[in-house]
Length: 344
Ligand SMILES: [Zn+2]
Ligand SMILES: [Zn+2]
Image (cartoon, rainbow, N blue to C red; front, top):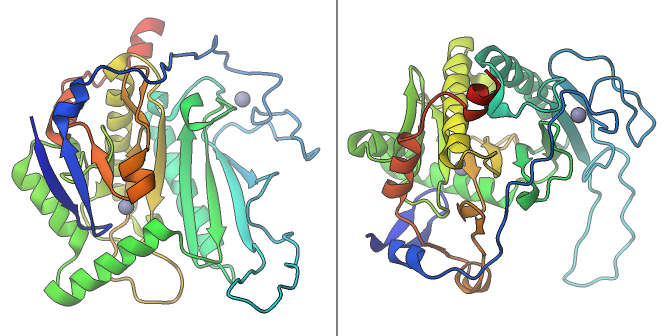
Protein backbone atom coordinates (compact mmCIF):
# COMPACT_ATOMS: atom_id res chain seq x y z
CA UNK A 1 0.00 0.00 0.00
CA UNK A 2 1.28 3.44 -0.89
CA UNK A 3 -0.22 6.50 0.73
CA UNK A 4 1.68 9.71 0.12
CA UNK A 5 1.92 12.82 -1.97
CA UNK A 6 4.31 12.82 -4.90
CA UNK A 7 5.62 15.86 -6.74
CA UNK A 8 5.03 15.92 -10.50
CA UNK A 9 8.13 17.81 -11.68
CA UNK A 10 6.90 18.34 -15.25
CA UNK A 11 3.54 19.79 -14.24
CA UNK A 12 4.86 21.25 -10.98
CA UNK A 13 1.94 20.02 -8.95
CA UNK A 14 1.23 17.42 -6.26
CA UNK A 15 -0.34 14.03 -7.00
CA UNK A 16 -2.00 12.20 -4.12
CA UNK A 17 -1.21 8.46 -4.28
CA UNK A 18 -3.62 6.46 -2.12
CA UNK A 19 -3.61 2.90 -3.33
CA UNK A 20 -5.81 1.63 -0.49
CA UNK A 21 -8.68 3.46 -2.16
CA UNK A 22 -8.47 0.99 -5.02
CA UNK A 23 -10.27 -1.56 -2.85
CA UNK A 24 -13.33 0.56 -2.34
CA UNK A 25 -16.51 -1.14 -3.54
CA UNK A 26 -17.14 0.25 -6.99
CA UNK A 27 -20.49 1.46 -8.11
CA UNK A 28 -19.41 3.37 -11.19
CA UNK A 29 -19.98 2.73 -14.82
CA UNK A 30 -19.16 -0.70 -16.19
CA UNK A 31 -17.43 -0.61 -19.54
CA UNK A 32 -17.35 -3.76 -21.55
CA UNK A 33 -15.20 -4.78 -24.47
CA UNK A 34 -17.64 -3.93 -27.20
CA UNK A 35 -15.24 -4.46 -30.09
CA UNK A 36 -17.55 -5.46 -32.88
CA UNK A 37 -16.71 -8.28 -35.25
CA UNK A 38 -13.54 -7.09 -36.87
CA UNK A 39 -13.06 -6.91 -40.62
CA UNK A 40 -9.95 -5.98 -42.59
CA UNK A 41 -11.99 -3.68 -44.85
CA UNK A 42 -15.23 -1.89 -43.97
CA UNK A 43 -17.14 -0.40 -46.94
CA UNK A 44 -18.82 2.11 -44.61
CA UNK A 45 -15.55 3.35 -43.02
CA UNK A 46 -14.43 6.79 -44.19
CA UNK A 47 -10.79 5.91 -43.47
CA UNK A 48 -10.53 2.64 -45.40
CA UNK A 49 -8.75 2.70 -48.79
CA UNK A 50 -10.89 3.67 -51.78
CA UNK A 51 -13.83 4.93 -49.69
CA UNK A 52 -15.37 8.39 -49.98
CA UNK A 53 -15.21 10.76 -47.02
CA UNK A 54 -17.84 13.26 -45.88
CA UNK A 55 -15.98 16.00 -47.78
CA UNK A 56 -16.57 14.12 -51.02
CA UNK A 57 -12.87 13.26 -51.33
CA UNK A 58 -12.11 9.65 -52.14
CA UNK A 59 -9.25 7.97 -50.27
CA UNK A 60 -6.59 6.51 -52.55
CA UNK A 61 -6.02 2.76 -52.56
CA UNK A 62 -3.24 3.33 -50.04
CA UNK A 63 -1.05 0.48 -48.84
CA UNK A 64 0.96 2.07 -46.02
CA UNK A 65 0.48 5.22 -43.94
CA UNK A 66 -2.11 7.66 -45.31
CA UNK A 67 -2.34 11.27 -44.10
CA UNK A 68 -4.84 13.93 -45.14
CA UNK A 69 -6.35 17.23 -43.96
CA UNK A 70 -9.07 16.63 -41.39
CA UNK A 71 -12.53 17.09 -42.91
CA UNK A 72 -13.69 18.55 -39.57
CA UNK A 73 -10.69 20.70 -38.60
CA UNK A 74 -10.56 22.30 -35.16
CA UNK A 75 -8.01 24.74 -36.52
CA UNK A 76 -7.30 25.42 -40.18
CA UNK A 77 -6.64 27.88 -42.98
CA UNK A 78 -10.36 28.11 -43.72
CA UNK A 79 -11.21 29.37 -40.22
CA UNK A 80 -13.37 32.48 -40.36
CA UNK A 81 -12.24 35.90 -39.20
CA UNK A 82 -13.51 36.37 -35.66
CA UNK A 83 -16.34 38.75 -35.02
CA UNK A 84 -15.21 42.09 -33.57
CA UNK A 85 -15.49 42.19 -29.82
CA UNK A 86 -16.67 45.08 -27.71
CA UNK A 87 -13.85 46.55 -25.62
CA UNK A 88 -13.63 44.43 -22.46
CA UNK A 89 -11.37 41.91 -20.73
CA UNK A 90 -12.30 39.35 -23.39
CA UNK A 91 -10.19 38.52 -26.44
CA UNK A 92 -10.57 36.37 -29.51
CA UNK A 93 -8.69 35.57 -32.67
CA UNK A 94 -8.75 33.36 -35.72
CA UNK A 95 -8.45 29.59 -35.15
CA UNK A 96 -5.64 29.32 -37.68
CA UNK A 97 -3.38 26.28 -38.06
CA UNK A 98 -3.58 22.78 -39.46
CA UNK A 99 -5.56 19.64 -38.62
CA UNK A 100 -4.42 16.32 -40.07
CA UNK A 101 -5.53 12.71 -39.84
CA UNK A 102 -2.97 9.90 -40.17
CA UNK A 103 -4.18 6.35 -40.88
CA UNK A 104 -1.68 3.79 -39.65
CA UNK A 105 -2.37 1.19 -42.31
CA UNK A 106 -5.09 0.14 -44.76
CA UNK A 107 -6.17 -2.55 -42.29
CA UNK A 108 -9.39 -1.53 -40.56
CA UNK A 109 -8.96 -4.19 -37.90
CA UNK A 110 -5.33 -3.86 -36.76
CA UNK A 111 -4.56 -1.55 -33.86
CA UNK A 112 -1.13 0.00 -33.34
CA UNK A 113 -0.34 -2.81 -30.88
CA UNK A 114 -0.98 -5.40 -33.58
CA UNK A 115 1.10 -3.81 -36.35
CA UNK A 116 4.51 -5.31 -37.10
CA UNK A 117 7.62 -3.41 -36.01
CA UNK A 118 8.37 -2.28 -39.59
CA UNK A 119 4.93 -0.65 -39.93
CA UNK A 120 5.37 1.28 -36.68
CA UNK A 121 8.77 2.49 -37.88
CA UNK A 122 7.11 3.67 -41.11
CA UNK A 123 4.41 5.44 -39.10
CA UNK A 124 6.89 7.24 -36.85
CA UNK A 125 8.92 8.28 -39.90
CA UNK A 126 5.73 9.66 -41.47
CA UNK A 127 5.08 11.63 -38.28
CA UNK A 128 8.58 13.06 -38.55
CA UNK A 129 7.70 14.32 -42.04
CA UNK A 130 4.37 15.71 -40.82
CA UNK A 131 6.14 17.54 -38.01
CA UNK A 132 8.70 19.09 -40.33
CA UNK A 133 6.01 20.26 -42.75
CA UNK A 134 3.56 21.62 -40.16
CA UNK A 135 6.13 23.23 -37.87
CA UNK A 136 7.55 25.21 -40.78
CA UNK A 137 4.23 26.94 -41.45
CA UNK A 138 3.93 30.55 -40.38
CA UNK A 139 1.86 31.13 -37.24
CA UNK A 140 2.22 27.51 -36.06
CA UNK A 141 3.58 27.55 -32.50
CA UNK A 142 3.06 23.92 -31.55
CA UNK A 143 2.34 20.53 -33.15
CA UNK A 144 0.24 18.16 -31.04
CA UNK A 145 0.08 14.57 -32.26
CA UNK A 146 -2.31 12.20 -30.49
CA UNK A 147 -4.35 9.04 -30.78
CA UNK A 148 -7.66 8.48 -29.03
CA UNK A 149 -8.35 4.75 -28.85
CA UNK A 150 -11.52 3.07 -27.67
CA UNK A 151 -15.15 3.96 -27.23
CA UNK A 152 -14.57 5.06 -23.62
CA UNK A 153 -12.49 7.97 -24.90
CA UNK A 154 -15.12 8.80 -27.46
CA UNK A 155 -13.75 7.20 -30.60
CA UNK A 156 -16.50 6.45 -33.06
CA UNK A 157 -14.35 5.03 -35.88
CA UNK A 158 -12.19 2.04 -34.90
CA UNK A 159 -9.95 2.32 -38.00
CA UNK A 160 -6.52 2.88 -36.38
CA UNK A 161 -5.47 6.48 -36.85
CA UNK A 162 -4.06 9.47 -35.04
CA UNK A 163 -4.61 13.17 -35.36
CA UNK A 164 -2.39 16.23 -35.56
CA UNK A 165 -3.28 19.75 -34.45
CA UNK A 166 -0.77 22.38 -35.55
CA UNK A 167 -1.90 25.40 -33.56
CA UNK A 168 -1.14 29.09 -33.24
CA UNK A 169 -0.93 28.55 -29.47
CA UNK A 170 0.95 26.11 -27.24
CA UNK A 171 -1.25 23.58 -25.44
CA UNK A 172 -1.29 24.19 -21.70
CA UNK A 173 0.31 20.88 -20.67
CA UNK A 174 3.18 21.44 -23.08
CA UNK A 175 3.55 25.02 -21.89
CA UNK A 176 3.79 23.77 -18.28
CA UNK A 177 6.37 21.13 -19.21
CA UNK A 178 8.39 23.63 -21.22
CA UNK A 179 8.38 26.09 -18.30
CA UNK A 180 9.38 23.37 -15.81
CA UNK A 181 12.12 22.09 -18.14
CA UNK A 182 13.54 25.56 -18.78
CA UNK A 183 13.57 26.46 -15.08
CA UNK A 184 15.24 23.16 -14.17
CA UNK A 185 17.90 23.60 -16.84
CA UNK A 186 18.63 27.13 -15.62
CA UNK A 187 18.77 26.04 -11.96
CA UNK A 188 20.66 22.75 -12.29
CA UNK A 189 22.34 22.80 -15.68
CA UNK A 190 20.68 19.47 -16.46
CA UNK A 191 17.66 18.28 -18.42
CA UNK A 192 14.72 17.55 -16.11
CA UNK A 193 13.41 14.61 -18.13
CA UNK A 194 16.90 13.08 -18.34
CA UNK A 195 17.04 13.18 -14.53
CA UNK A 196 13.60 11.53 -14.43
CA UNK A 197 14.95 8.76 -16.70
CA UNK A 198 17.95 8.36 -14.40
CA UNK A 199 15.71 8.17 -11.33
CA UNK A 200 13.49 5.55 -12.97
CA UNK A 201 16.50 3.49 -14.08
CA UNK A 202 18.00 3.66 -10.57
CA UNK A 203 14.75 2.47 -8.96
CA UNK A 204 13.77 0.05 -11.71
CA UNK A 205 10.39 -0.96 -10.28
CA UNK A 206 8.37 1.12 -12.72
CA UNK A 207 10.21 0.25 -15.96
CA UNK A 208 7.94 -1.62 -18.41
CA UNK A 209 10.08 -2.01 -21.51
CA UNK A 210 13.57 -1.04 -22.56
CA UNK A 211 15.52 -1.48 -25.77
CA UNK A 212 18.64 0.31 -26.97
CA UNK A 213 17.91 4.02 -27.12
CA UNK A 214 14.32 3.92 -25.79
CA UNK A 215 12.52 3.12 -22.54
CA UNK A 216 8.93 2.88 -21.22
CA UNK A 217 7.89 3.36 -17.60
CA UNK A 218 5.05 4.26 -15.28
CA UNK A 219 6.38 7.49 -13.77
CA UNK A 220 6.83 7.82 -10.01
CA UNK A 221 4.33 10.70 -10.06
CA UNK A 222 1.68 9.00 -12.26
CA UNK A 223 -1.69 10.69 -12.05
CA UNK A 224 -3.60 7.82 -13.67
CA UNK A 225 -3.41 4.06 -13.14
CA UNK A 226 -1.22 2.56 -15.91
CA UNK A 227 -0.08 6.04 -17.02
CA UNK A 228 2.98 5.28 -19.15
CA UNK A 229 5.75 7.37 -20.65
CA UNK A 230 7.68 6.12 -23.69
CA UNK A 231 10.80 8.08 -24.55
CA UNK A 232 14.13 8.07 -26.30
CA UNK A 233 17.03 8.09 -23.83
CA UNK A 234 18.66 11.05 -25.52
CA UNK A 235 17.20 14.53 -25.29
CA UNK A 236 15.49 15.75 -28.45
CA UNK A 237 13.01 18.59 -28.78
CA UNK A 238 10.63 16.73 -31.08
CA UNK A 239 10.15 13.52 -33.04
CA UNK A 240 11.78 14.96 -36.16
CA UNK A 241 15.14 15.09 -34.38
CA UNK A 242 15.34 11.32 -33.78
CA UNK A 243 17.79 9.30 -35.88
CA UNK A 244 16.59 6.23 -37.79
CA UNK A 245 18.05 3.92 -35.15
CA UNK A 246 16.36 5.90 -32.36
CA UNK A 247 13.06 5.69 -34.26
CA UNK A 248 13.53 1.94 -34.57
CA UNK A 249 14.14 1.53 -30.82
CA UNK A 250 11.25 3.85 -29.97
CA UNK A 251 8.96 1.80 -32.24
CA UNK A 252 10.06 -1.43 -30.56
CA UNK A 253 9.47 -0.13 -27.04
CA UNK A 254 6.16 1.51 -27.96
CA UNK A 255 5.00 -1.72 -29.59
CA UNK A 256 5.98 -3.83 -26.59
CA UNK A 257 4.23 -1.40 -24.24
CA UNK A 258 0.99 -1.45 -26.23
CA UNK A 259 1.06 -5.25 -26.54
CA UNK A 260 1.49 -5.56 -22.77
CA UNK A 261 -1.43 -3.16 -22.24
CA UNK A 262 -3.72 -5.19 -24.54
CA UNK A 263 -2.58 -8.43 -22.91
CA UNK A 264 -3.22 -7.14 -19.39
CA UNK A 265 -6.97 -7.67 -19.65
CA UNK A 266 -7.05 -9.55 -22.99
CA UNK A 267 -8.92 -6.67 -24.57
CA UNK A 268 -8.08 -3.61 -26.66
CA UNK A 269 -6.64 -1.23 -24.06
CA UNK A 270 -8.36 2.16 -24.44
CA UNK A 271 -6.10 5.17 -24.18
CA UNK A 272 -5.22 8.70 -25.10
CA UNK A 273 -1.68 8.74 -26.43
CA UNK A 274 0.02 12.10 -26.96
CA UNK A 275 3.44 13.02 -28.30
CA UNK A 276 4.86 15.77 -26.11
CA UNK A 277 7.11 17.93 -28.26
CA UNK A 278 8.71 21.28 -27.62
CA UNK A 279 6.85 24.33 -28.90
CA UNK A 280 8.01 25.73 -32.25
CA UNK A 281 7.41 29.30 -31.12
CA UNK A 282 10.92 30.53 -31.79
CA UNK A 283 11.94 30.39 -28.12
CA UNK A 284 14.83 28.30 -26.84
CA UNK A 285 13.68 24.87 -25.61
CA UNK A 286 17.03 23.16 -24.92
CA UNK A 287 15.72 21.55 -21.75
CA UNK A 288 12.69 19.93 -23.39
CA UNK A 289 12.90 16.15 -23.88
CA UNK A 290 10.49 14.66 -26.43
CA UNK A 291 8.35 11.84 -25.01
CA UNK A 292 5.11 9.97 -25.55
CA UNK A 293 2.48 9.83 -22.79
CA UNK A 294 -0.22 7.14 -22.69
CA UNK A 295 -3.20 7.60 -20.39
CA UNK A 296 -6.09 5.20 -19.99
CA UNK A 297 -9.35 6.18 -18.33
CA UNK A 298 -9.72 2.64 -16.97
CA UNK A 299 -8.67 1.58 -13.47
CA UNK A 300 -9.70 -2.02 -13.93
CA UNK A 301 -11.38 -3.92 -16.75
CA UNK A 302 -14.71 -2.21 -17.16
CA UNK A 303 -14.08 0.41 -14.48
CA UNK A 304 -13.63 4.05 -15.38
CA UNK A 305 -11.58 6.51 -13.37
CA UNK A 306 -13.85 9.46 -12.84
CA UNK A 307 -12.43 12.92 -12.54
CA UNK A 308 -14.32 14.46 -9.65
CA UNK A 309 -13.86 16.77 -6.67
CA UNK A 310 -10.05 16.69 -6.32
CA UNK A 311 -9.35 16.71 -10.08
CA UNK A 312 -12.08 18.88 -11.56
CA UNK A 313 -12.97 20.79 -8.43
CA UNK A 314 -9.48 21.32 -7.08
CA UNK A 315 -7.16 20.72 -10.02
CA UNK A 316 -4.87 18.07 -8.48
CA UNK A 317 -5.00 14.36 -9.14
CA UNK A 318 -5.77 11.64 -6.65
CA UNK A 319 -4.37 8.34 -7.90
CA UNK A 320 -6.04 5.34 -6.26
CA UNK A 321 -3.23 2.99 -7.31
CA UNK A 322 0.48 2.66 -6.62
CA UNK A 323 2.52 3.25 -9.79
CA UNK A 324 4.90 0.43 -8.71
CA UNK A 325 1.99 -2.06 -8.61
CA UNK A 326 0.63 -1.02 -12.01
CA UNK A 327 4.07 -1.26 -13.63
CA UNK A 328 4.53 -4.73 -12.13
CA UNK A 329 1.20 -5.83 -13.59
CA UNK A 330 2.24 -4.67 -17.06
CA UNK A 331 5.68 -6.22 -16.74
CA UNK A 332 4.12 -9.58 -15.88
CA UNK A 333 2.26 -9.77 -19.21
CA UNK A 334 3.39 -11.57 -22.35
CA UNK A 335 5.14 -9.70 -25.17
CA UNK A 336 3.14 -11.69 -27.75
CA UNK A 337 -0.20 -10.07 -28.53
CA UNK A 338 -3.11 -12.22 -27.36
CA UNK A 339 -4.98 -11.84 -30.64
CA UNK A 340 -2.05 -13.09 -32.66
CA UNK A 341 -2.23 -16.27 -30.61
CA UNK A 342 -5.98 -16.52 -31.29
CA UNK A 343 -5.55 -15.92 -35.01
CA UNK A 344 -2.50 -18.16 -35.37
ZN1 LIG B 1 -11.55 1.48 -42.02
ZN1 LIG C 1 4.74 15.15 -21.09
